[in-house]
Picture 1 (cartoon, rainbow, N blue to C red):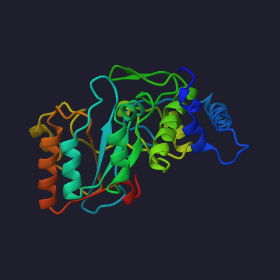
Picture 2: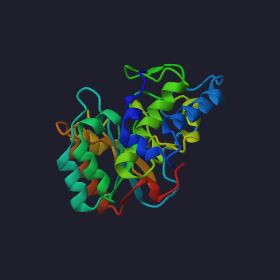
Picture 3: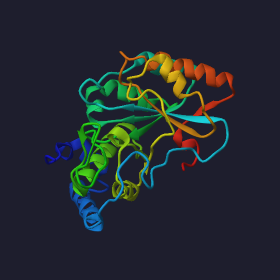
Length: 264
């Protein structure tokens, strides 16, 4: 990965500096070196969406659902479904929004709007949208982070970027494609992020029809974590998820943020 220019910006230096004598880039590199040393000899044995340590449900049997929505920031994924977000705001449907660094750069005003609304909480979807690997594995045609150092930057640089906008540290991390090895999950945990998967794949990356999205939610039980996209306004995700929300509310379900319940 190229040397990260974000740490050359005065705004980020101001965010991370605790005193006039503190050099935030030195602190960043010191933490990175400690993580590299701790995990450099650990060889992963798992690769996938549900490896050890990934949290895929809420720890409750109540009729609640956590709606999590991704904005990926890759080619074709820089959009913003304003109609979907407006519907959630109008109906007071909370959600956890996982945003990627390049998407933030292309949508600065939308990002500020989302961050200002307490209905939403912001999750970390990575700086360059890469699967979370310590040895460069690929998923869905996307090459993962090559090593511990790249994984560290993927998590921490986007965490810093989001904190600069929200004044809050991110608590949740979801990688590009939702693929991890178990060492990467431990590293994310070490960096104070819970790694969030899903129990309902709502729109398969904004590729499903509205009808298929409804079908994905047929067997919903309490404590589900659902994932959809909100960066593809051209897709049928909006229509499908609005139908789902109306139906589940009629059935007595309540929508919540991830932080409303412990994860399991």
